Amino acid sequence: MTYTSDVSARDYRYFLPMAISESEIAQVRSATDIVALISETVALKKSGRRWTGLCPFHGEKTPSFSVNGEEGRYYCFGCRASGDQITFVREIQHLDFMDALRMLADRAGIELHDDANAGPARKERQEAMAAMEKAVTWYHERLLNSPDARPAREYLKSRGIGGGIARQFKLGWAPDEWDGLAKGLKFPEKVLLDTGLGFVNKGDRRQDALRARIIFPIFDPGGKAIAVGGRVLPSPYGSAPRPDGRVEAKYKNSPETSIYSKRRTLYALNWAKDDVIKSDEIIVCEGYTDVIAFFVAGMPRAVATCGTALGEEHFKTMRNFAKRIVLAYDADKAGQSAAASVYQWERQNEVDVFVARLPKGSDPAELAQHDPEALRKSVTDAVPFLQFRLDRVLESANLATAEGRGRAAEHAMEVLAEHPSELVRDQYIMQVAGTLRLEESLLRPRVVELARNPKPRTANEPPTAPSPPRAARLPMPRPGLEALRLRVHFPNDVKDRLIAAYFVNDVQREIFDGLSSERSLSEVIDELDRRGEEEAAHVLSELAVDELDRDYTVEDVTAVVSQLIRSAVTVELKNVARDLKEGNMTPEVADVTVRDVKERLVLLDSSSGHLAENELREWLVERTSSRSS
Image (cartoon, rainbow, N blue to C red; front, side):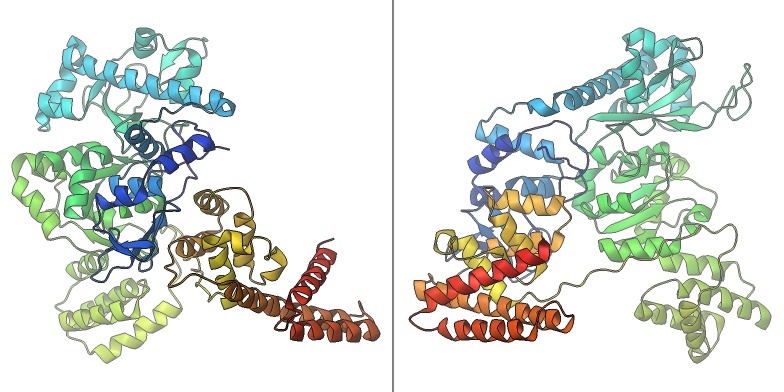
């Protein structure tokens, strides 16, 4: 089995730069002292058999972060962050799974080897990564040294991008040739197709995907080249037809490949992440030159999407780095953002979305050149997304007449009604009422009405998906929790006394089945995560760091098992009553069954308790087996 990873997720379900066997992952885990590792970041104190400290993943004054050194797990009872040594390094260092694994392997002096079953996939990915790195270097050298790149160099200088910045961002130039890159680097057809750097034309010749364009390399957060974006020069062609009749799009990006996902990738995050973490703010731009402009202006925390709209996966990535997200868009485009989606992403990812107050008609690249202080101020003075949308309505309104104020109020209420929080809406109602000189009591009912029955969208408005229901964490049955706690901390004492049929709760039964395998605790939690059993993974992570205030005696274990059996028998007796009602069991058999079972429940607490436990165990296994057959 192999793991996959995504730099923005807390599980291992997406991209895998390199395939590694489970045995080597387990070897790295066992060789890494999780207490020593976490102590480099968190001040841990011994508390019984556990270590506790302030959680590094959320602000708190009272320690709720617990570490189990024996099992190599951590868990926060405040924010529910959990994981093992690899997860901790990923979250703290903002690395993907493989980079974190390599870091810990190097630390432990372990050499990683390929999983033989994953050789071809890993080889293809390695070839694609190596080819992209070579292509980026080839394009970069062409920009710096080739005579045909002079117009590109002059254009970049006109945009305030000199040689130093071009080198920092490894900018490049794709010559106006059919196969300059393919021929220069002698890439085979498969590599060209796998990376999106080229294709085979109708004449069966290898051809470059990008021609006569400034190249903006796109890197993953670890700094590895995964794609390229190309921008045409404003002249001599721009958006006008070329001599051969082709019309060039302004920007052209690499297609989706095995190493590049547009919906998860943010341009320049590899350079921006340090300042993003330091400032707890990330600036989102429309284009690559806007990102570079913010770096030039002294705010190296800007990123951009890569030829796609800002989406949910981008928010999932950004939330790992900062809680304040500032949209540095043109005012019209910022206003066109799907409000319902933005509010949904804010709520789900616990981030705050602001909009930079860019001077009208200016873009970041122009401001960075002529008025960098204004660019910095636009971010400092950024307003919440809802405030920005309201300001747009009120600034365009005619407030000199009653009719103008009425129309403005109606439009403002429509904007307010889109926000999911009644408390937030009410704060803005007071603001709108003051601006329009209207009574708040007139506006509140209208907002409530619109929130319940929103106006139909116009043809130009994109549909927005409804917010998915968030599953509440239901209380776990106590007998099952106590039994699982014993199974985690005193496995030898209960290993032969627990069976899956005792667990009436589906989540607890999933956990027990996982613990009954030969896998380690971390491997069981990983498997639950991969299967989407998030609640089971959280419960097991919490149990792993539970502090037990005493050792359990044999009598204590018997009491817990007896409680668990009583709980399971109670549920199964209801199933007997159902079978009787549906005609699947005769009254005589049902009466005998209920009487025998209740007699054995009484004997559980007697000197014959062991015999009664075994007989009830056999009955429960028989009942559950008959239902599943």
